[in-house]
Amino acid sequence: MVPVGMRTVKTAVAVGLGVFIAQAVNLQSPFFVAIAAIITLQGNLVDSFGIARDRMLGTIFGALMGLGGAWLAPGNPFVVGIGVALIIYILNALKWNRAIVISSVVFVSMMVGYREDPSPIDSLHRVLDTLVGIVVAVVVNFAISRPYSRDRVVKSATDAVLKSMSLVRKLICQQGSFPLDDIAAELDVLERELPALKKEVKLHIVRADSDKDFDKIKNQIDELYQNIFLLAQLQCSRRLNIKNSEMVNRLYQLDTTPAVKMEEEDIVFNYHLGIILDLLEELSQTFDVRGQWQNQNPGEEQAPF
Image 1 (spheres, helix red, strand yellow):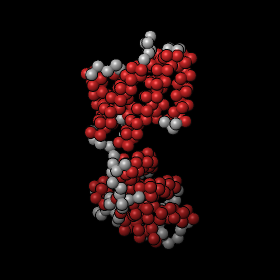
Image 2 (cartoon, rainbow, N blue to C red):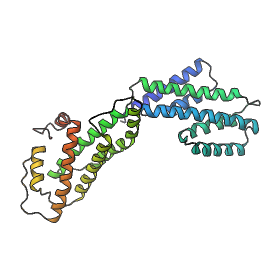
Image 3 (spheres, rainbow, N blue to C red):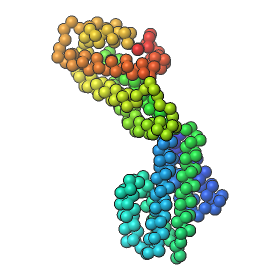
Image 4 (tube, helix red, strand yellow):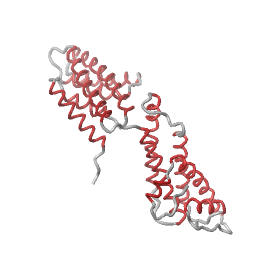
């Protein structure tokens, strides 16, 4: 059974609350309140604030375009098409890309659902409806299980380190499958959330971590993934050189013996393994994962690193 995510719950709350408010104060179009709430409620606070601003600008622009178009040729399909094209072109030129959708929706609604006497009041209603939806979405996102990108970055980086530890041990011991997709998924989260984390720090929503350089950490995990991927492709006996054998024994409490003679593929294997072990050691110290490793690997006598 697929779990219901918190963003789904918050979106439902924001839409329901927005429609309730629209009906309670007799707004012209609860539909636009709901649409604005759905579009605005994002996975983190920074994106919600940014999209709220863009949607509001887009709504005002679309309402003004709709007012002009309705006066010029209300309901005319040709004018509707040209108007949407102009909105896309102008907002792209202004770099308001995220405002294009809501601006086009507002414009088309005013053109197709026009009255015989279109007035600035119609535009004002569209702006007001959208504003209510935006405010409700931002408040709900802020009030319920507040989503910080920093928390997601730390969790994904920590999970990537723990998953890499388990995967490397399996590779060395030649045990089981090697689910590289799990690490790739954490990298995708880091790629998506890092820009928002930087904005959170810039806007003083969260404090900067003086002991963590997340750009460097993301690059380290990416390098870790690439080297593990290469090791998983190598078809060799997994013989360890002296340095790697000592490090593996210390980190994983394994009783490995260094090989006396090595083939060319073994040399390549140990080169990439050495990079992996060095990265794991540094990353595990950065995120202090000893306790978590013990919980996830109760069979281990001692946590690595």
